[in-house]
Length: 347
Image (cartoon, rainbow, N blue to C red):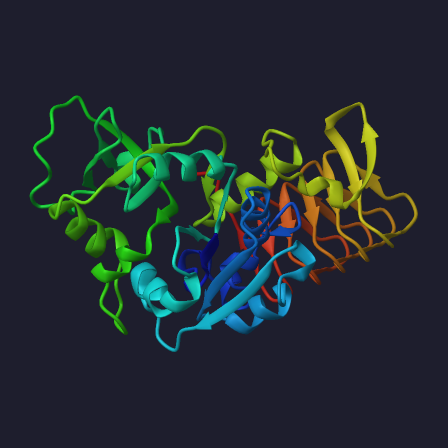
């Protein structure tokens, strides 16, 4: 099987950070978002992937390369103009092969059991399966409605004449993961912007194709806002999130303090000055330089090569790689890179 990761978006809600770092490379616990999805695919035996690129696409390609570091074979599809979820997939039709394939948003974190989802898709002889999650925010995101057998009848109100199936109907949140058969691409015109949910799915359902929802269990999150990005970083650091397929904190040297949720994680070659204070949990990336009397934590996450000035204090914040913090500065509840510090509200 092959997969496509959708990574061409602009990340508008994450500006100004996303003006320099494409959203799929923004980190959670110092690991770029897109890497979580590559590891999920690999865990379920999918080792060939196409990634579509547009905004800062070169940075993504430079970071991932040919995928060998992840046990994957990765190729890229650069879109001069964004083609949308449907148009992007249609553009690489020949590269996805003749069989079932997976499409997944590159900017989510999820531990869905893809093996079970693909099995259910095949047992039902489905043309398309949407992986969904029971969540109180379903209406906010645009609910997928389906009957007790999983037949989809409505997607965010976009289906004008839904199938006349007996209820009751469940409502769930779409996770951004599709399992598709190649014939789905017959419903997508070439070389234009197409949203697969708004265009192809309504046409498939109108034609009474086998289109199903598969409710997942486990963890899922979308990181579309600064608030969610900061919150999920904090939850990962404090071990409130546990993914079955990957633990990003194992990338650092582990120095326990009391419990795992109250720990210091140090990367390689961290340079610590005198009288540095750690208030766990704290994650320090490789090559960071932390000067005298700096106070880090609780909830400080420093990317690789950050430099923290004398007497600076960092609390409940995420610093992207290479960020420099001047002496005696105080950062709390921010996401920062080399050029900007984005204060994140609690709402």
